[in-house]
Amino acid sequence: ARIHATDPQRIQRALEVYRLTGTPISEWQRRPGVAPLPVRTLKLILAPRDRAVLHQRIEARFDAMLAQGFLDEVHALRALPEMRAVAAPLDLPAVRAVGYRQAWEYLDGDGDAARFRDKSIFATRQLAKRQLTWLRGELDARWFDPHMDGERLAGAVSTFVAR
Image (cartoon, rainbow, N blue to C red; front, side, top):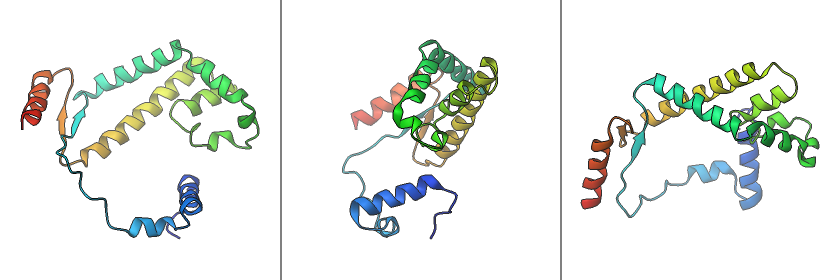
């Protein structure tokens, strides 16, 4: 009842949990939380402070994926009989991953290569922004810029390991 009818991913997950366990997902979610780990943990977040640096890295990573045959991978995925049997392959969770949807649409003839690249990079930036927002909620985490805070990062890890 809590899952909206337009949220197929959560509906599918709830049905999988019920089918595998015989217990509704709502009952699993009401159970007490997991006990804390019996070991100490150090939660580190490595992210560039400058958003422009992050954007440059996203572009470079996507260009590297293209150079390593990403479009060939998506083309081969589209050719699988299992994918051809699905009425709406773009609704599958795996194809909804950032980059795959844009590549699929491009291979369907939606726009040119430059537009495909721009749309993919934009979608990746949006994902990175959501991830950083989520990580800001991790109150016990320590943030480091891996290229600017190398010594501080090494010191934090050394201090943690020494205790």
